[in-house]
Image (cartoon, rainbow, N blue to C red; front, top):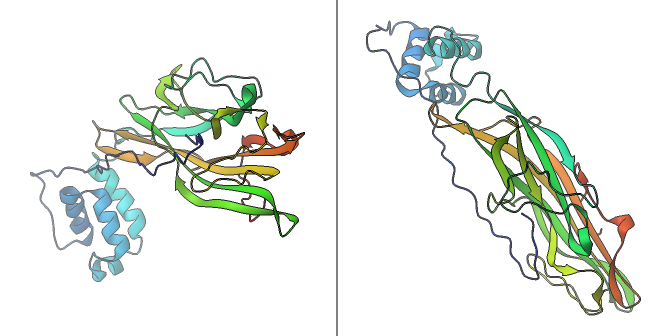
Length: 303
């Protein structure tokens, strides 16, 4: 959650994930002809697992003569995966769940869905709802091919910057106060997520980047503190810009499926801009330049 409340509150704190890989058990009663390259790979799969064998093939650890004698090694491994999963039968959780963005809610005056079970909900959405200095959005994510017993998680990174217009040498100029590159972790907890399937098919995530403790208009001299800097009290414009990338992972403990990305496309992009300006000695919203919407945006040297 991209909350800024007068101090630098964002922490790089990742959620612990169970990275257990799927392993196919061997059949002790089955004999292996170790003179056959295919059976050598099949034996490795049964003892150390399909994923481990695939990594060994890609890295060249499996002896070169076997690689050279199997020109279609990639498809051969895929065939062997089916064989070790029980003679070509469907593996557990096949097809895998898929997550798609079903709705992006950002209308001014709206709230998060009544189906959104996130601990922070309900939330007001749109640009500076109730004149609070933040923007709010909600994503409704549809899960298809749900595998009973699956766990889901929504993760987020961002790029962000803040800017101010101040007098430098008697001339009003823009300067960038701070910049966090894309990849900055922005998923401190699950309090903004509803990860239990609603209506049998939806999970939710909301976010409200900005300064929740502040309400417009603000008096002259107000400063805005971001992750690592504070604006000047004599600035006449202040801008906070962010772009976000979110994705969905799932795991299934009973089937030994570790955290796996299932979002399609891989990343759901969205952005937020808060543009404030001093009018009549008070800080007010520049509504024409402020927005929260789907898709990326450019974070440059100036707003």
